[in-house]
Length: 262
Image (cartoon, rainbow, N blue to C red):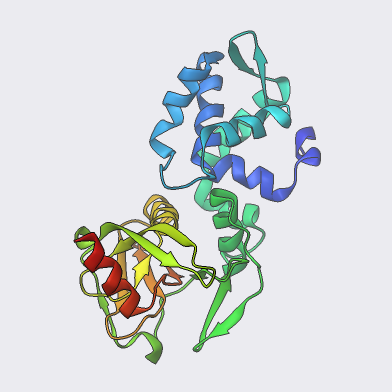
């Protein structure tokens, strides 16, 4: 067993393989031996999503430095001896991924493992407690905003849902007057078929994750009543579903706000 495995948790080892930013940094330094900050950033830039506040480059770079995987020497970065071992391991796993995936995750690709992966990618704390939601197993984040389903959802709760044309989503600024007469302005996504809203931050985080690991994402919603948004991505061999709690305000208040803005 490679010595550095002892000093890293299973989740951290897994993140070096599935996290595209960390993986790209290690691959770049393994190929060219050294690189500047801008060089490393450029190699990972395609995987940094602007709507994900925790998926930033510095967060992942600091993780690699703090775990003595890479070292900064002047203005350049290099792999440590430990990092070189890890680079060989990452390259090997990339080549043998489909055979080793279940071993690294610790069993079958369970809902729990999926929640671990999502938490690592986004920084959102997942409760890891599997709950029953209308007959389907789900894990929620600690704020009860995002839920993950591993398999396809087949139950009556979603029977009134319809696919949304995501091109019709628009950014809207909403002012919410609190009970203290203070006005709070928030930016949300509005769809012409809905009377409620969707957080652009959570939309970006979920779609980015699904697109990278599962493929094209389709968004569904209940056009009759405020309900969780449903995100589904399907590949040839697997399917993953998320729900995101809606953001909505009193309809009369919204009409008054929209009238003022006109």
